Length: 203
Ligand SMILES: C[S@@+](CC[C@H](N)C(=O)[O-])C[C@H]1O[C@@H](n2cnc3c(N)ncnc32)[C@H](O)[C@@H]1O
Image (tube, rainbow, N blue to C red):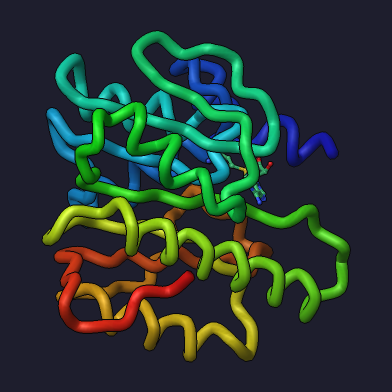
């Protein structure tokens, strides 16, 4: 526990006023892939406690729109919209579009994780399920040419999911930020250049 509480990125999060060490994962992803830019509309699925929302808002700026969705409540962040909601609920799409005034968004992010059971294949399956949900939401709200970031725990369904993401984006990369814990099975898929025509919509 001592290591968990006091590791480098935890200390850095405190120092910079971020709510979670996860903030640095998004910073590193964005430095490498430029998925969020000034003025972007960004949706973050599985956003509590809000570390990614803080980073996304900093980058998107005043003119950007940032919306976070989570099962858990998120303490308010200035200029950020939040929804306390299960991302698997079909009406999540309408609620997001209500906030944007019907506009589609430039980037969909998902760092959603199941509560870990310790059973590797069960946790993997639930993580893929959440990642597919995030992709399904993207199919409904992402602009042509938009960007996508999703976390998955690696396992036997990973390759098939990667191929599904490939059908939708011009470029897809798998990336593990330095801020991910070494022992973690998590990996992020980064899709850039959403292509509406090249696939059949999920869900
Ligand atoms: C690792 S945390 C996200 C951390 C966040 N990126 C940050 O920087 O603060 C994963 C989140 O996914 C959420 N989550 C898991 N399943 C969900 C679901 N079905 N709908 C909405 N949120 C979900 C959890 O409640 C949890 O808050």
